Image 1 (cartoon, one colour):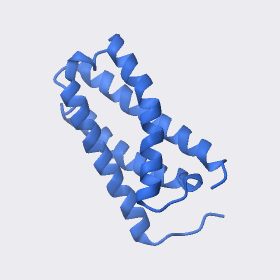
Image 2 (cartoon, helix red, strand yellow; image 1 turned 30 degrees about the vertical axis):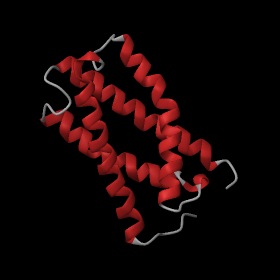
Image 3 (cartoon, helix red, strand yellow; image 1 turned 90 degrees about the vertical axis):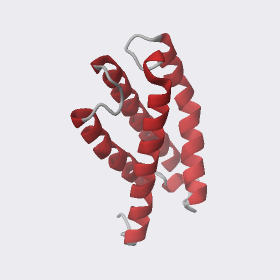
Image 4 (spheres, helix red, strand yellow; image 1 turned 180 degrees about the horizontal axis):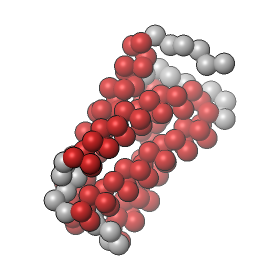
Length: 130
């Protein structure tokens, strides 16, 4: 059974979700259409390079928040849903991810990839010993 944590626990990870959303928005805007367009080979490279980056980020979050790595699944779910809520609004109602539909689609696909990747990694870590 899941243990209920203090509100500060949830707010910390929600805040991290907002932070990572903003960080990835900045990265996506800096790379722009030179990377984030459908069919771009550089986009594939960004996808692949994200795999080790996700592991590093999850381990860093675990250390900073003093959370055992095998207990990072719930925090990553909180971080991811916080970021996804903002993503949904940003993609649906703004052009924050780029000026063209192609760039927005490539950016949104990358963000979904990142969320799935973090959840897979956190799930895998949950089966390891602390």
